[in-house]
Length: 167
Image (cartoon, rainbow, N blue to C red):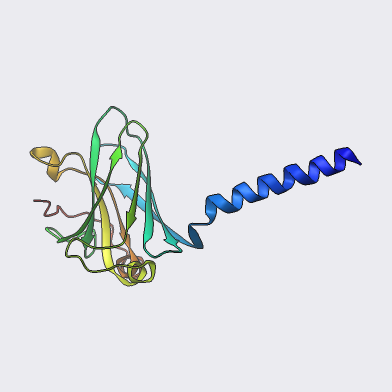
């Protein structure tokens, strides 16, 4: 009987911890692929998770990165094939050692509020650059369409990646 009580108690603790870990999120999330954008063999995913208090957690996970660099991440308006697309938001850089980045996004660069639902309707893309400045600024390591740009790209079959305006 004591053993059964301990099992139930441990089960409640584990369940409580799991519930607390996910309590910031509504359960709505979507994953988009990030394709290789240059001669560097880097690709991955971006996951948008809706937060209960508003906003979205943007989690990027790349494979093929290494070193100690911080790789700039931009949310651009338009399709990945569009050159010089406006930057809608600067996201937290990817740590090249882990290949990870996480940003809580509530506003765009122009201070417009952005929700999870808005992101799903936005014609936009994510681009990860080699550097913030210099020649590396024009090297796109990985990129992917999100929201309406993803839907349109699937219908059109476009996969080319255009250089971007990152000044």
